[in-house]
Length: 190
Length: 190
Image 1 (cartoon, rainbow over the protein chains, first blue to last red):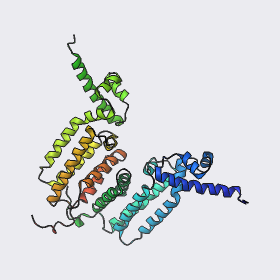
Image 2: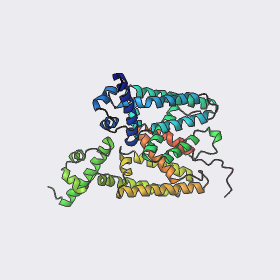
Image 3: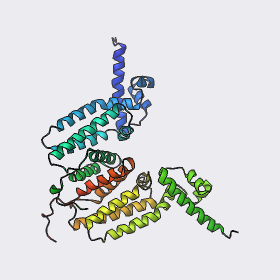
């Protein structure tokens, strides 16, 4: 005998849709069929659209929790004793995060003024503050910018998608070595 | 009064198709309409396919001359006195080359065993030899690989396409700085 109320049903559908969307996007990327997501969650496509008016809304909801965790770690890193190490850790976290679903980077880049966009702005802000701290500590070259870090994270996320995780890590390793202030680098081949 | 023979016409069509394809691909990328290329060259689409059975064949022909020039420069760089500088020059040349038409990197990556693929193999070979020379000269770290360089070139070409040329150059600058050997003094004299 079920005593579930309509609201409880709606909540259950919402949770199921999120969990199936997570699985489907992880397998097939963020342009996977929303019909398939609804089918796997055992609901009609109209129910999916009732909860999530479009694809970005679904991805946004899916990332909300993950993003919250990421941003909290980012804030913690801003207080970490070793600034350059903290910056490196941030880069690794964001690259792994961006690679969670194929196509996520492209969704971020398309730039609508919504929740996804807000996370992108917040992410960039944390990166910029981490760079400033590392410069002030003399641990990276003085001309390093948040944009440099952003470029590297995008390039590494793309490499992870189109090449291998090992290649992406190596790209980050080498580039981060290039962040060191001139006196700490033995020699810069140019 | 024209004394042109059919073969001269065919040659003229071929040259026109190449020159219009160059212009159209530079504007719209390598997935531009082949109909548009034929129209601009003033020939029927059948004439285009008579010369170039498919898109890859057209792009391949278009790159043949440019590639030849690039490879010759690459071979010259293998004899240049400063090995690390030569490697850097090679990276810049390939990144610029790869960015000549939007979508070229994807065409290269799709991996059919044809002329485009052969150029890719030749390109990789030159990169590997330049890395080996720079390692032997003690000008880059001993664990640097041709794959690292290939990864960087791809990532930079992608950044140039999706970000700006300035961001791509900065990524190369920083990464190449990271190629430097850890401590020059620790190296045995040669």
